[in-house]
Image (cartoon, rainbow, N blue to C red):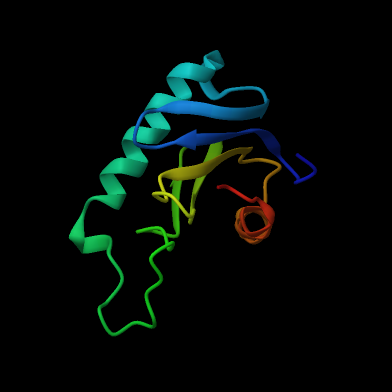
Length: 122
């Protein structure tokens, strides 16, 4: 939450839509609805072959998530979904929302990746 423009973040299981942890204010005022909607977007991106890595694009790891990031922007905010690899099923993502006027999308993406790398999930 020390990122410029950060309004809140959540750790979401994108297969179930359950929130595993939150900080800050939820977008739209409802944390559960925000988690379900973020999970729907994450699931849609993860299940599409169009967004899958190229077969020759490096060494795949069984713990690698299907997509790295998903970025959504609107008039007043940015939403970043960072998919996380886990030892179980890689169905977890970090959802960060930033105020567009104050936020730095590039910095937020870098910091979110660093944070995801430090989290230990099963």
